[in-house]
Image 1 (cartoon, rainbow, N blue to C red):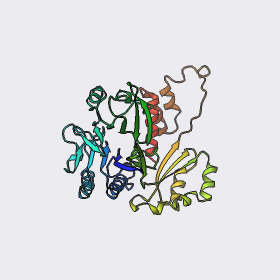
Image 2 (cartoon, one colour):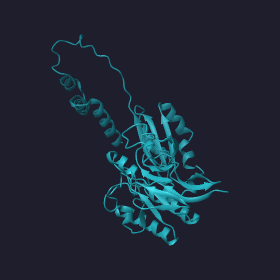
Image 3 (cartoon, rainbow, N blue to C red):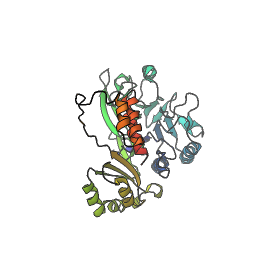
Image 4 (tube, helix red, strand yellow):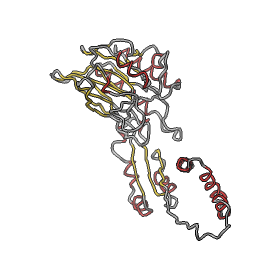
Length: 369
């Protein structure tokens, strides 16, 4: 039998006006992606299950809450329902924000079926309580919906639990990961659990891939399977300049003009048509950012990424004249020809953790561009 959809699954919507405070005109991405998902559900006649972080904050802005309610109302008008679990970003222990509109249904504490398969959900749960929540998952659950940091998926950072500890459910659909992935994990009892992450629906970090999608869960030839549906999202282009010559050559051949005329851009909704341009450049290239910005000519949202140049300087204390300086800070004060340079050196020397302070100083420098 051909593919028969059961429901649509998406996660990490992070609904908010814009994800970058320093780019206030780069807005609407989260709304546009969610609108496309709802459009698909209505056209395909499917219910929608959301895997947490629907909103970006524990106290979301009213526009995002209203927008979510409006999209859920569209689903109800088409006789379809939106169910959800909460994520760590928007978790509320008493009244989940998606229920404010009265048009979305918490998946926690209820049984839902899809084509004869049982669906159960767990709100984001702290690590010291997750084991108890997993024990409470009812027998006969086919799909477990969560928003957790699982040890089998997360390479670095703190995790909240192990997929192997899931007692029931052979399919785990999880939010929290902003990348799409599919992985098989062996549970403690020996059965195989297929883990599915849809990834975020729009970029939340400039380091993310801009290509995003959601999941259609279905059955084909008697087997559960998963199809990815791509979303139209804001494009991102990247450039790197280690030398001034590389920059000169790219400017001469109009690389940015080529990006701006990419044939895929007119296919995007107007609200997300202006692309992101991330430029990594050697911070010793004269006026690098000004030259890049002039060539971009307001056709991109520019994310500069200057790279520091570190020179090793050998200093011989044995050869220093005796009694020349009382302290290293005093030496900086006497040798500095610019007060700003001295202040930077003093800030670093006085820091409890120079490595952390150096990173902070560099971030301050990038923000000043």
